[in-house]
Length: 111
Image 1 (cartoon, helix red, strand yellow):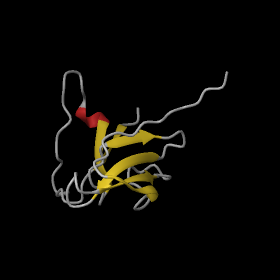
Image 2 (cartoon, rainbow, N blue to C red):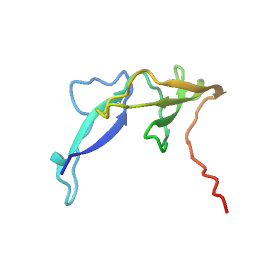
Image 3 (cartoon, rainbow, N blue to C red):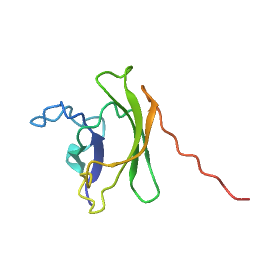
C-alpha cells in the first residue's frame, strides 16, 4: 500500500528544520503519512478546495496582517505528484477584500 500524502501549505516564516506537529491518534500508523512543504510564501491560507484536475485553489490574504490585507485566489498544481507545488501558483483573482476565511466549490447539476 502506498503511503497517504498530506498536503499542507506552510507559511514561509516557519522553520523547515522541524515538523510543526506529529501525526498521532488511536489506530493511526504515522509511517503511513508523509509531511511535506507544499508551497511557500502563502499567507493566511484559510480556504482551500481541490478541483477535479487535482489542482488546489487557495484563498489567501496577502499583507502584513490578516485584517489589513488584499485577498487573492491562487491555483496550485502538482503535475508530477511529488507533494510539492510546481511553482508559485497562478493568481486567478486579486484585489478582493482581505481576511478571506473560506473557499467553496459549487457544482451545477444538470437535470
